[in-house]
Length: 205
Image (cartoon, rainbow, N blue to C red; front, side, top):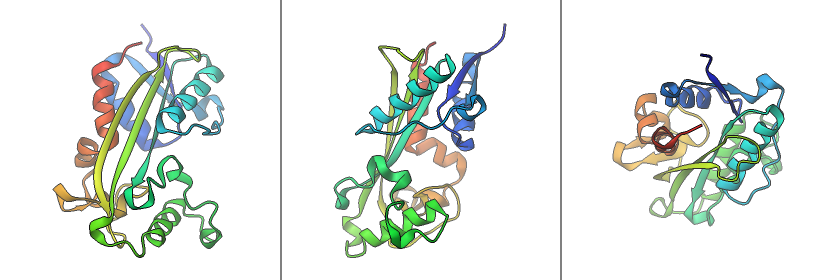
């Protein structure tokens, strides 16, 4: 019996590996949407949940297959929740950062700029991750899994692991940034790790 194909509404290899590993016991194969020539959908939602569902429905509609999507980001209290749902494109509209092609570096530099006058004790933040699974494009009851990860924003970049805002996200319990954690430890305690653990418990086709 062949495995059920599920489309991943992302081209991120790290996410693909983590999510496929989570679904190993379900006899499914997770295939990134780019292998079906599916383009990214405009993320017009106002929350992580809305955007995750948008991406999952778009991938499912384009392929006729079940789809899984992830939407995640960083919420900083001193910035009223920014960058939030705009985390991946936080620096794109800022001309100060237009010369470099390194999106992660630009986003981190902008975050440091925005927090320049904020004291360390007031830099509380958290990562959020939402996973949305739809059995078909019009699935009336998408499966939603969520995870969050508390920390604070450092005053300078530390560590060369991970991606995104990891070099600025200080994890008090581990006394280091997310970029200084081992991959195994990060997968265990991160926002995405928690959402994936939830997915493993409730997943159904």
